[in-house]
Length: 340
Image 1 (cartoon, one colour):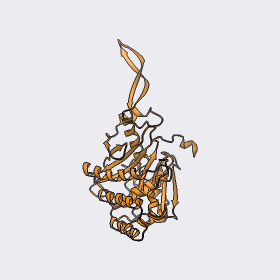
Image 2 (spheres, rainbow, N blue to C red):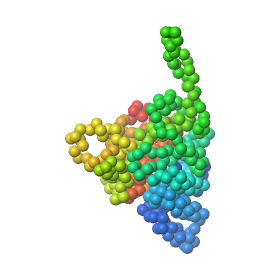
Image 3 (cartoon, rainbow, N blue to C red):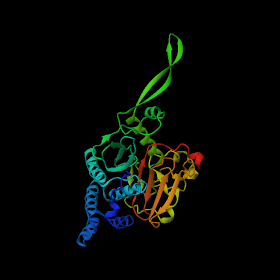
Image 4 (cartoon, rainbow, N blue to C red):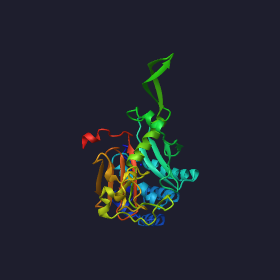
């Protein structure tokens, strides 16, 4: 952001509780100073060296906030038993630098990991200066070599909707689906069974797009809309207050609005057009599809999707730190309405 027992980055800074507090809100120079002080005090270790190297690499590539969020999101994912080994983390952080440079993205986000039977897909997304412009999605099987995925289409969504079960982990794998097609010959219409081949890469595009539209999250105020239309990162955003962070209404879907367009003028009267231009999570259907928990002594709020198990969003109140990561099988919990 798996089941083998290996040292994590948290162990390099004195345990799970220690490293987020030590690094939160600090830039690369401050982090480097902390680790230098540890070295002089005789508390140095190879894991601290690896953390420093990867932190500096990602800070150059993505900026301080994205570097910090990625390390924290990987730590949260590892709590559910789906973490990355140190060598995978180092490969990921370094390769994202090259992705941002080669594709000339404004920002590169590590989207998550889709678990396959043979191999796992590591997903990253490139964003342009307009944060709600269509995102470019890339996948990798080894965290080093990245391939660009085509944008999702309605045809892809319809074609892959019949495929069920786990991903294989092979982009060239083809699923077979038998369907009835009407054939007209000589004025007579009859049905014939046709075997349709569906590539796993097409299914991967479709699932990522569905998860993005359904559960990609951003806190209110993290983005702002200019009078001319483009959506930019809000540099003055200092995080939600503790009371706001506990409300679903403080979080928006990170996509173009759908429900907002259907609101009446009276309902829009209290909205700030520069901040409230996306759909709020409080109106999601079914009700109760989100779990909100306060962790680490109210220092971190964590939202988990029950509709798409594996999606975890985090935000440290009163700080800029926020982000989400998906680590799961790519399967939707279609039974959720009957479980609530």
